[in-house]
Length: 245
Ligand code: IPE
Ligand code: IPE
Ligand code: MG
Image (cartoon, rainbow, N blue to C red; front, top):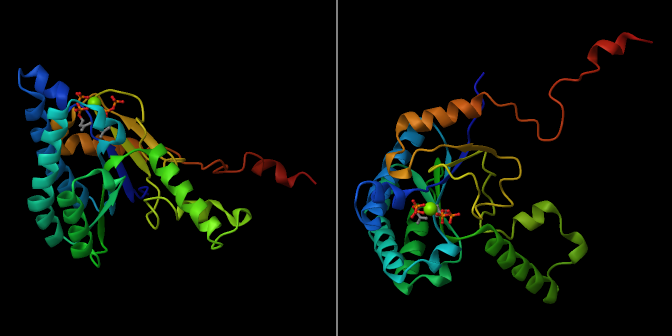
């Protein structure tokens, strides 16, 4: 029996190193990385993975040199213009998580338009984490909750895990089952901190532009071999002793 991989999260890392290793500029690495996104999403859809979250730009990435940030913004703009139209045809609903107020008005308009255009396509979901970090998301959620308390809509004592999750950017989306990080780094870099409480983690040395269908299959195979216990026991170790009166 295959374990259902419903939600895959990917920390797409290593574009810069991929380019440097080839004597190219980091820009070329990001362009190659964007092509990988299209390939990997197709592969995910073929494998029946219904939710894919891609970490494309972190809150901390704003601190990169202005020229690199500008290149990434241009790539997002053209991705949102072109490739997303393709996704729309494939019954994929797009969600954005992160602090979108930091983007230009033009990019914010594009995001809104895409979200609205793909609403109703409910079979597959692509969640793009842009200007995202887990801590920033939690702080924004706490702020919103505080405001609801202030206006009398909420009582602090009523805050359950479920209610807290409804204040996150990912409200209504399932938690990730598997998180893949490319480029050999074994850290989370502020990705989905709340949501990955029980996610399986998979680290691969492959740099994101090189990430292939077979690398995806290796990650899925590893996931399927794992035993997810969620803090409980799969089989009672006391089973054989129950006959003792
Ligand atoms: C990932 O590749 C893309 C972003 C974080 C935007 P990097 O740009 O981080 O590539 P490396 O880690 O420097 O190789
Ligand atoms: C994580 O990669 C963020 C994204 C992939 C968007 P980074 O390259 O920014 O992470 P660190 O700096 O190596 O932790
Ligand atoms: Mg990196």
